[in-house]
Image (cartoon, rainbow, N blue to C red; front, side, top):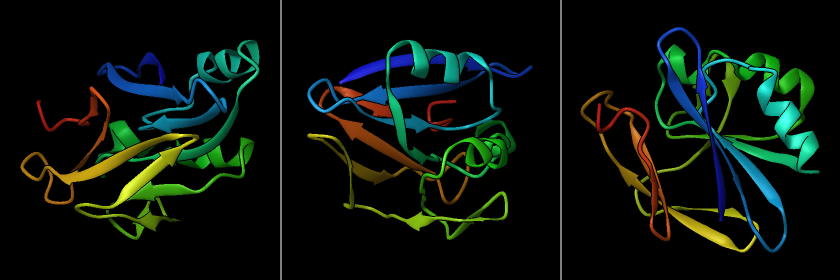
Length: 132
């Protein structure tokens, strides 16, 4: 998996673009804002965004969703049914999320927020603010 990190907004929340090396399917993890650097990276690397994964429901990880969905018609995956007024595909402990041939598993990581989840791919963990 190829992972590109973007530091977003005034409180420097992270977003990650994750791409399967074989299929080039791409997912955005967390969407605090729609920063022009993200679509520029997608275009430069000839990637197509296939889905968005949200680790927890705080604005610094979700506020960019409405703009993203204006640009890309993709599903949003989260542990709760609605984020920023947008219906999601709900996942929970033990579920999996596929990005091309890469399969990540969901682990509940409440604490920072009660609905927090982390997504584990191989040796990479997307934990939102669970390690805050």
